[in-house]
Length: 297
Length: 297
Image (cartoon, rainbow over all chains, first blue to last red; front, top):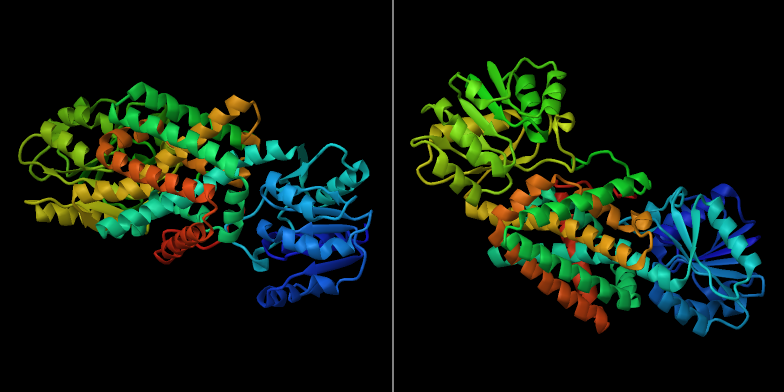
C-alpha cells in the first residue's frame, strides 16, 4: 500500500501517524485535521506528512483511509471522501462500537467499496495528539469486523497493516463485538461516570469535602470518568441496546448485593467476593493486567 | 510510650511493625498473630519483636494496642486483652468503619479505658505481611475518631504516633466518618465487585470469552474487586445503613443515565460527563492521585 489518509489526529490518529512513520509502511501519509491546536502539535513531531484542513483539498488516490474522528462525525466525513475512493481503497475506522456506526457509514458510502471496521483495544483517559505514541497498539488486541462477501485480499491487507503496528488480530461480527465491549468497556465507563456523579451529589447534600478522601477507591474510578465526553456519548448512544441490557443486569445484581448486606447473608456475600477474585487471576493470566500490587500513585 | 502490641499482622499490621521498628518509636514490640504462614514471613523481616500465638501468654503492661485484625474479630480480641490494659494504655484500631465496630468494642472493653479508633486511608488489593511496607502511611490521611469526654493527653499521644509514621491527621466523629467513606471507598468497592460479577454472568449466558478483552475498562475494576473478602464483608455489614443509602442513590442516578441514553438526551449526557471530569481535576489538585495518563500496565 502506498498512500494512507488518517482522518482526525487525536490520541489514536496521532498514534497511527507515529507508528506508520516509524515502521515506514507508506510512501505518502496524508492527515486530515481541522483543529489548529492539534495541527501545531502534529507539526512538531517532525514527521513527513501532508496535513489538510479540508478534505476537498485532497486529490490523490488512496490505498487506506482510517477514520479516527468521533463516530458521530463519520457520516459527514464519508460524504466528503467518496470522491477519493477507488476499487483498491480500503476504508476502516477505530471506533468503539460497530453495528450502528457501520450501518450509517454503508448508507453514505459509494457502491462497491471496501469498508472493514477495526477496533484497536487501547487508549487512555487522556485525549489529543500530545498523548499519542507509536507503541500504543503493540501487543494489544485489534478486532476486525468480518462480514459476509468480504473482499478477502483487502481483509488480509488490513490485517497485515495492524500487525505491522504490533496488534494481535481477532475477527468478530459487529453484533458479537458490540455485545462483548458493552460489558468489558462501555458499562465500566458508564459505571465510573455514575459513581463520581453519585459522590458529588452526596457532597452537595451533606456539604462535606468527600473528594479529599478519595484515595480509598473513588480515585481509580475518577480516572476512568475523566475520559473524553464526545467519544463516550457516541459510544453510549450507538450501543444503546446492549447498554440497557447491561445496566439492567448490573442493577439486578446490585440490588441482590443490597439484600445480602441488609440481611447479613454471610456465606452468600463471601461466595460472591471470592468468585470475583478468581476473575482477577484470569485477567492477569490472560495478560490484560500485571499482578503488581497497586498502592496508589 | 514504651510497649506496643500489634494485634494481627497482615498488610496493615506488618506495615506498622516495619514502621515502628524503622522509626524506633517503642522499646518493646509485641505482635499477636496466629497464622503459621504469616509468622514465618514476619520472622524473616529480622525485626526485634516478640510474636505471640496466644494473647493469654502476654503479661507485660502496654502503652499502645493496635487492632489490625478483621473487624469481626474485635469482640473476641477485646475479651482477651482486657487484663493487659491499665489506665495508661491507649487502644486503637485500623478498621474501615467506626460506628458499629466502636459500639461493639466499648461493650466488651473494661471500664475507664482509652479507646480511640483510627483509620489510616491506605492499602491495596493485596493482603498479608509479605506486601506490607514501612512507608505505607507516609503522606496518607489518618482519621482519628474524637468523641466527647476523650482523654486529651492520650489523643495527642495517638496523633503523635501516626504522625511519626508519616500520616496527616484529621479528626471526625464516627457518624461522619462512616458516611464519608461509604461514598469514597465502600460503595466503589461494592460497585467493582458487582461489575465483575455482572461480566461473569454475561460470560456464562453467552458463552463468549469476555475476560480476554478486559483491557478497555473491566481490568481496572477487577483489581479493586480482588481485595480481601473477609475485610470487605465486615465493612459492608458494619456500614449497612450508609451502604443502602449510597446504593439507592447510585441506582437512581444509573437509571437516569439509562433514560438519557435511551432517549438520546445529548446535552444532558454531555453535561454529566463534563462534570465528572472536573472532579478528576480536584482529585489531582488534592494530591489523591497524579495526572500521569494511564495506558494500562
